[in-house]
Image (cartoon, rainbow, N blue to C red; front, side, top):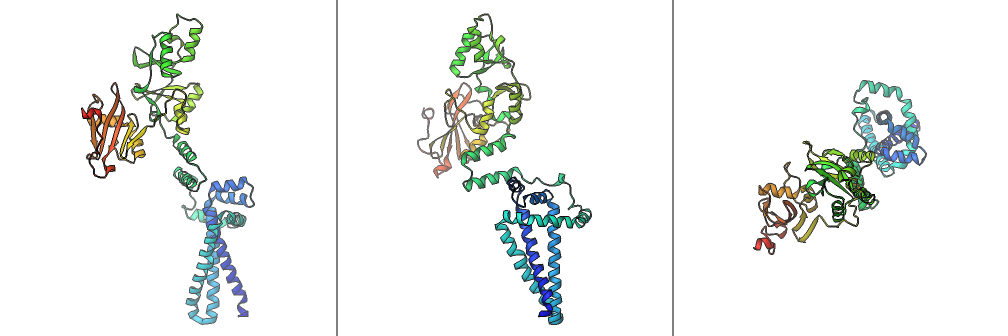
Length: 434
């Protein structure tokens, strides 16, 4: 066997190099760009080479494949030559079986498992070597890129390295492992969804907006400000759709202190800012900051007044409800009994479905639970107590409270939650009993 010492040494060397390239592939391909940048910011040894490799993932992959194929073919050739000398023609089959097992165990599976367990450390260790090899293989890489268009695709056709869905998955993983708190998770999700939210989704709808006419006195304006607790109120002329300005309570007090009795609300209000209901709130926030205003009037495609939106409304999308001394904290969903809930009439159907795990129908003709009730009734409710059945009677929507023609509260009864599919006892309201 002494005469085969050199061949055996070269065979072992090829197996070791195969293990090196296989483990390098797992470590370098699996590590993310974000992690690489973190390591580079920490000035870890090998991080600069690692960053350079991740900038050209195609070159990295080609370099590893070239190296791995060279040593694997070399190992097979050497093993075959030794086997032919020892066993003759039968040695080809023996060499094939032995090489496959050795490369599979010691050149592929084992090294890859090790690299997967210590990807960061191993990636930093092998990156400088792979970077040098990529420069040595540069002519071969250039030829391969020209021969195979798929390997030489431009960056414009490459998928993003990190998608929004992947970021959300990482946030969920962080929450499960305890590195991210529930509040932090909610805020991070809000930030990701912030740019997709429109003014219509978070505005105060027209029916809930407090307005004042431009002909009222300062004393009447102060009374409205005092009753509502608001500091800014839209002003209209003749009809509600004709919004002509925004009145600030400070301007009213200033005018009264200055004894400007002949002045009118029209003279001290400032011009309103109109925005379409489809406007993204991230762009809207920038515009509000540039114009230094706190409130905007939301209009639809027909330029009709549909609601208002404030800086506070936009910020609440990120940090949750911001309550002041005039706000009353009230849950949008209140549970009266198992399967029986009272919800705000202006709550969106999609939000209720998500909160209560229901399947209330959605349609373009309505967005809120109150709109769903009106759609199914076919008319505006005349009084509390009117109800509709949904999903073949499994759900009942009951009007609990109204303010004028507006539905304020709706009771949702989930009969399936009671196990018998029938209306639970004691579910009648005073209106029903009458």
